[in-house]
Image (cartoon, rainbow, N blue to C red; front, side):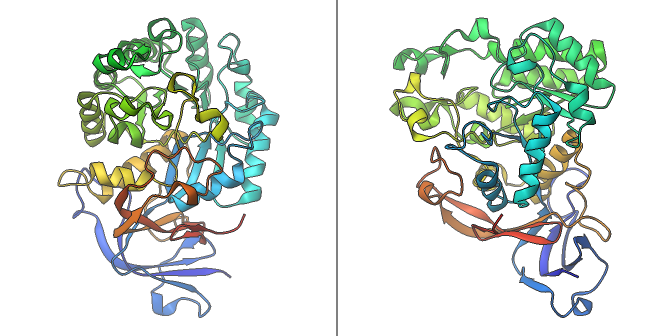
Length: 441
């Protein structure tokens, strides 16, 4: 019998009534036996229990990432499922959803089961595969949606991320198909004709000054508008990946007011960074969608506060040096995010109207519900699975890209100091990471 005792933690249940900290914060001990939270007192725990002194620490449900690129199979030089799992555990995650744009693409039941099995073999986080919407991410024919859902992987989220499902008829059919089993289509909202070839900077004054191809905000919002209308027409569920613009937020807000089945996510980097970061042409800041002006950053922060945007998702996108270290226009899109997400979100969001219970909502409860992960994002209560994260809200840590658990080094936060850090991550009663050091796979 394995057991863990968390002594004197400030516990947030992960099911806040609305906003703020005081309504659900309780200082108490939490005892875990065989992966389940019990109603035992710490003094009644088994004598061989692993005891964690959590005085001054915050206990939340373990984080869930809706948007992780693990690169395996095909680009194990940039990331593997094992290295990505280590990075996730260090970042406080107990479940991550692996995007389908691997080589080969995760567009069959066999491919999805392979991702599931590799994640289980590592065992540090639950790795749930996302299935491709279309075969080979080509946007033409639907992938094996039903077979992936009926496989051992039980795929419920489908995305061609990195590519927009441009064809309205294909998108309609996908929404109709997944409706039958409660699935969801996660869309990379980018109108290719509007964004244009090579677009890599928000279209505006800075793109003109830097001579970088522009990516207008409308290229995001028009796809979101089309997709929420298709969701209303079909009764299917659409999830908007990495929302980055005020215009996109307004469409989502309107759709939710109409009762349309839409959810949305925002990345830590779109909450924290603006287009100004591009002025040095550093390719680490090249992402898709691009970083936006301050007014868009303020809009997505406000939308996360009021629930228009449901969740934070990292869009963790590791790249080998030979893919990222190029002239800005030629470099690969994407940056790391799993290990730093909590620090960045806490830095830009915590305040009088956004507390630790809201962190639990946007990084655990809501993403778990969107993905249909019933064992995650649960209340911290007897009988619930012990998928937990302990946070030291006072810890100051300076990010060092060289010590990342990812195989890649495209970390935009290198050299920055944040207050608030993951202390311990627990997956079904097993400690998977402690103060930056993951357990072995």
